[in-house]
Length: 313
Image (tube, rainbow, N blue to C red; front, side, top):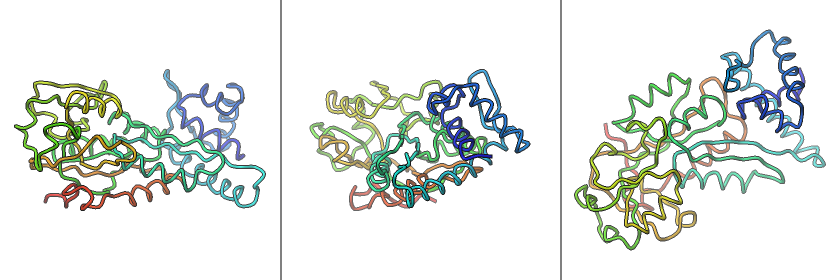
């Protein structure tokens, strides 16, 4: 077993295909396939299962990947400490629903630990893809929410994918609107107040079930619905069309501008925000550091009015 072979396994798990991993590693595909096969023969296990769409980690492979990442992390620490002439390119991928605090934590991590070279990725993506990213070990950490409506379905999905949900904080419903919207003048918005305005939601692709929606109360009727795929478009439409979206109320003015405000929504509901990890794989050094950064960015209740509260019993 060699360090190169361990790096090969980690890279294949990240990319999902032998061909993409070979390109990233600057070696030929046959050489990479042979190196993996040699390691599997040495260990007496099948690390990957080959499919028509690429490769998937086997149960033994998931366990092995956890150890491989830890070894590589330790080697990188040694190289950083004692081999300054050979800088290490740090790697991390996380997936999240569209939350500014998740981006803030990512920014803080990069500023403090990025170093001279890094390959860090954050995917603000659809809920099911987020879960799939962590399940397939493409991302070490995922960030999403649970509430009374989606919890049973999402916890079942997490369990089926060997994933665990870890609580960060619980928020009461808020509405994001443009600062110039008539709704921005209210101290509390009712569902009836929202009726004349366009409702903006993040589209969920093939898994467009209400249970995978990023917005609570998604089953309520709306005369004007607009689906978007990214945060910038959603915010532009909030401003341009006096639209709204239902959310946690947590917003960062530096990252998202000063033209969007959060107003409390008069609704008996909550959003429990947390992060997910794989049960069989311990997050690597930077995965753990990102989780710590997330915890530091748990919002202060006073900063968003009533945006954070205890979870209903």
